[in-house]
Length: 81
Image (cartoon, rainbow, N blue to C red; front, side):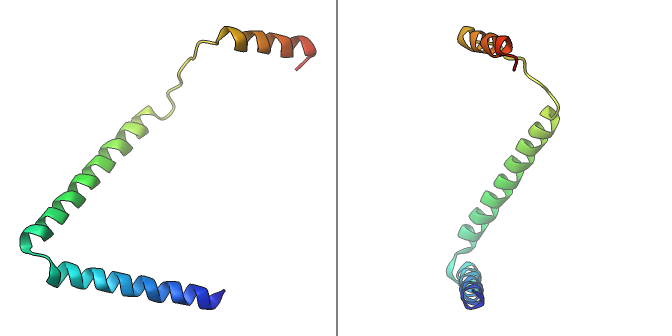
């Protein structure tokens, strides 16, 4: 178990290191700027979604009960549930 975890950490470190080297030395300035722009746009979108969900928190929606569901609920009530 520990050996597997150690191997995964080594693989993770290698992957992060390779990614950092590729980002620094393998990409042009325009490509790096494009990646930065994608990250920035993703952060803004996440922030907007988070604020919308926070605003909606605590809001309840009333659903109309379908006829078959109402019938089933009635049957359960008659049975004492």
